[in-house]
Length: 422
Ligand code: ASP
Ligand code: MG
Picture (cartoon, rainbow, N blue to C red):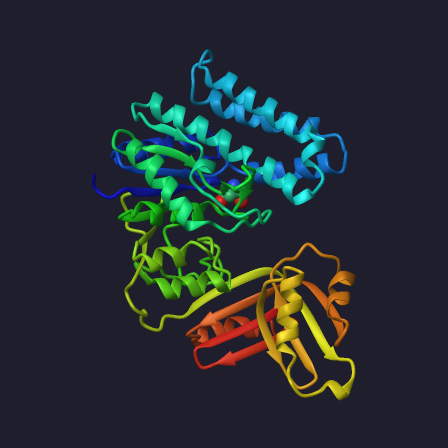
């Protein structure tokens, strides 16, 4: 068998019937046997499911939003299938299961566990619809439950992949199927050793595509998006933003770390380790080259601007001057780890240390308590971190206009970071 290919389609690419028709045509034009198609939940389904989970967990009424979500999926099907197609019963059945799970008090002990048992319905349903539609359009393919493939630990909402087991499953289950037909499967979900559903973190379907790519030794992974590829800045802010044709793994990984949201941060590392190129292409213009991420070495010093929002600044001030000396970085990283805070940026002076963390669902007073042994703590939320790699005058001048909202700055010759109120 020739090496498999992996394609990934996100929620926006299948947000309504017209969008699904577009993707089916794209696939038809590129149809090959050994293709794995990883699909997310349709449109904003995952957000809607998060709302349902919260309502149900708090014992509130969730019928209205549940029916709305069912209607959204049935409407989608109406635009794709004849009225008597069995997909309608199938979707209704999935929703009956979803309702039962939402009502199941046995899985409600812990909110994060409950979340994992429910949130993947979006993907389970969208992949059924998508696979049936491809078959109808003359692209016969198989449906595969990704939980049989992706093995993880039991860490709720952000499970870690067991690579050895996952590789075994992918080879044993997928390779024989791919010899005859392409396979449609879900992004985002996996299964732990106890057989419970787990998830890889929001927007985790890109990561699933990388997991499949690595496990199967794919020749490449392609993420199909509604943008032309990876640009060096937001075109709304920088009208002369340019698309990278080629981007080195390391540079792409750094960009996702600083907040570039085109690809999920965990996607690059496994692909880079196995030398599998990652294509980012537009589903609106499938024949136009997008960006290829691979082992190309550092690009010329093009300025790259990345903006990350909803960050929290934690200002730490030493309580007692007798504690001066030693920057207490070990203590800070330990506490951050305990409260599951991912540090994005740290800046230290003798008695003051500032850390910026990614969005965290924890009250201010809990954060303050976590650090209070050594520090007086101030928490400020809703901040925006602008990172410019290889800055030129144009970026510096653009952001100088916002100087009055500037909270922090960090500079080295090839990197500037500014923290602003948002
Ligand atoms: N559907 C999930 C989410 O919206 C996973 C994904 O789309 O990547 O987060
Ligand atoms: Mg999504």
